[in-house]
Image (cartoon, rainbow, N blue to C red; front, side, top):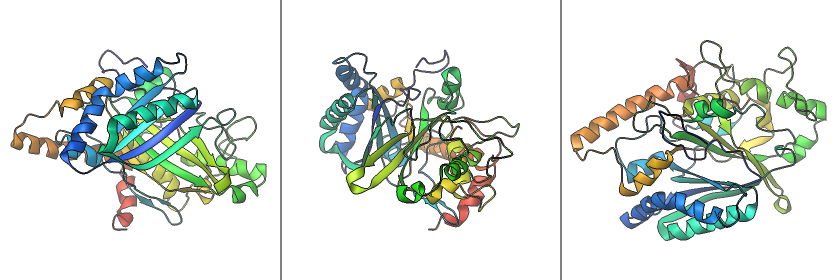
Length: 374
């Protein structure tokens, strides 16, 4: 992935989903020693990937490291990325998107699982007791990039320059250019109930044909279909994009079948609005029917620094002045910027899991208000 002239080199956020992927969420252990070890890892992450990747060239090994909101405050303080905040729980009339812990995200992709395994092993050896496991999922490519429910996933993903525009922070957040945001959720599917539906009914739930992956016409597609609720537009009617790297996972002996949803965006508000459409509904109550067969069991938001910033974070926050008053002001400014960045995520709705930056969308916070005390 090549950065633009005005933006530092991003991490590998716009790589293809790969054939195999490891999704690892970690918490930082208590104590200053653990914090120092994690910061040190940030400086060595790229080198670890290169070392493992050189063993078998052509396996397209990539690594993305994300940092959660609480972890950023603990490790670096102010200033902080403008739109970084804990994942916002969503409680609809019938379905819930929980907010779950997570200080660090490791997203490892390759053409073969052995490369994912080796890099994950080396990273965990480097981190040692400084981290505690929260969740780990091993994803795989399922035939022609189909999800566990049998439909092609990621059809509407942006490509090329559009993918960079959708995922990479520009000069709207000085100091954090080249970064990105990523939201992850683990979904478990009720395959017995799903497989009882006819193919035609499954297609109505998704909004696409199952065999040839053709989207239904707008006058045929149900208003509560997955596709209908996953498109987000700005106030001018332009569709906004996120980049998904979803992968299926399964443990057949335990009857566990799922999809690991992972969405990169320059503005997490776009993804948040898409999820609001799904769980709360557009209008409220008209929720994504796929949720009748798929339950979200995790939900976490991370900031993904540019490659250069990730390495610089090994020595602490490079933007910190050391002046308490200045740092405090930076926190206040960051909080305002974060609120401003989230507000766009709040408004104009319209819903494919294809979704950048929203203008004046006041709907999300009002829809979330009833669930904040749950």
